[in-house]
Length: 255
Image 1: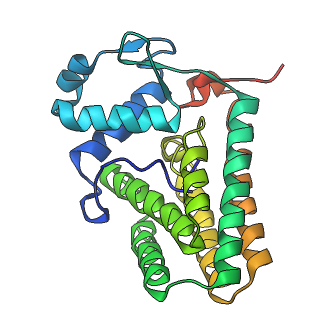
Image 2: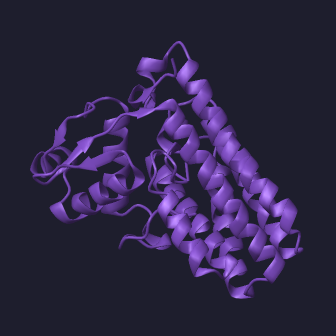
């Protein structure tokens, strides 16, 4: 899920395979796969040994995952793995779609700086290049995460509103609501590339709507974009493989 992710110092677009991003993806994968069980305290030093990375990128990765909502800070320091209700996750995704929808409507109505629009278009061209491959390897998913995060950040910048930027950062900190929160879930699904292609098409459509000053259309596309993530959530939680699917084990089914 997904408004860019909260802003912390991290890699640029050109170093999508950086140590921090790789550590973030690997830690997320470990959490979602149950290797780091819910409630378990995460020891930073043990991760240095497991991941073969220094403490600095691991610390930055833990911070991102806490902001994403997968981890919670402990009173005596450090982090622990969280669990979530299905309703919490669905509400967080819905809220992100609503905030992003308002942001892109404002962008379309007010007009946008060509340089920012051009950057967003270049990011999508880079994603198109990734999706031309029949399958995505770890490095490709790592780069997709960085590109996708930056694209959603730019949607806030296109709105020209500091209020919208602040709210988009805030909502991305909710459980599973960040634009890339389900990337690992998708990566382990047979339909992974298909889902990313649908999302990419919606990205292109929203930029087209902004460029043509179609505010209502832009807003509707971003709301639909969030519903794609909600549909993936429902299907994952209700799957017979619920307990073994990455990430879904942290989400409690509705009674």
